Image (cartoon, rainbow, N blue to C red; front, side, top):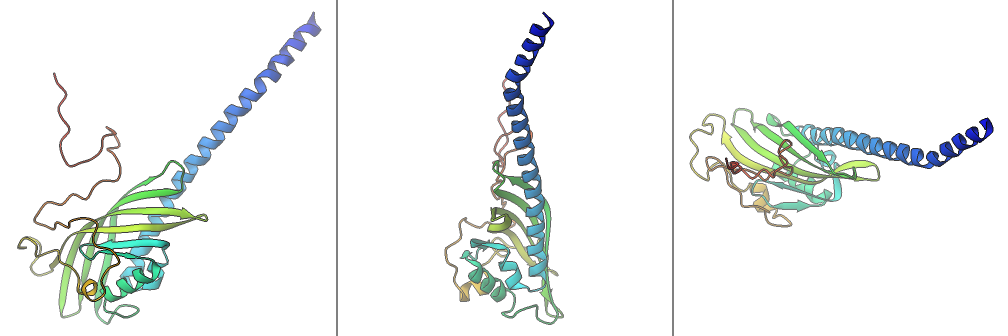
Length: 239
């Protein structure tokens, strides 16, 4: 009798082993994906901040190297520049046409308020950032810039890269005058660099600058309600 009971118990354990193994494998896979997404979000933040620091000091090639081979950049009304070489040349033309900053140039691209969402497969991501620019030339001029990034990122061969950088510029205004005295359309214009070096593609959106309200589309839904963020109030629930 005892032997029979031991035999039945052993059979039950053996029968349950595959199910337990499958459950363990599923948990390991879920944890692995979770770690990949967390590491991806951290890598994206590091990548974007590196871009800001490199552009701050006129390291155009280093900034361009952060992009995927088919990456793009779009700033304000300047249109879309595609590929590392064009991105480098555009950034260089935008800031004086030389490697490094010119003497007395201030070019601070302060990047704030990151909201990063990594795709379910852990191989791509989107992120929204706040841009605060402190720009100018010693004893000549100074400007403030305000804008929002909505960017795409991709993981290639284990390395995160910028796939599409899009800075929706709200305004660029003289330091002395500020944004309070802007006339409609005055604070957002196409750069001289873009006029001299036309983009590969036209702008993807109709730029609207301050004082006209601007709301670049949110890439992610509201994290509490799960609804898309459109800038319009959700309808009230009928009572």
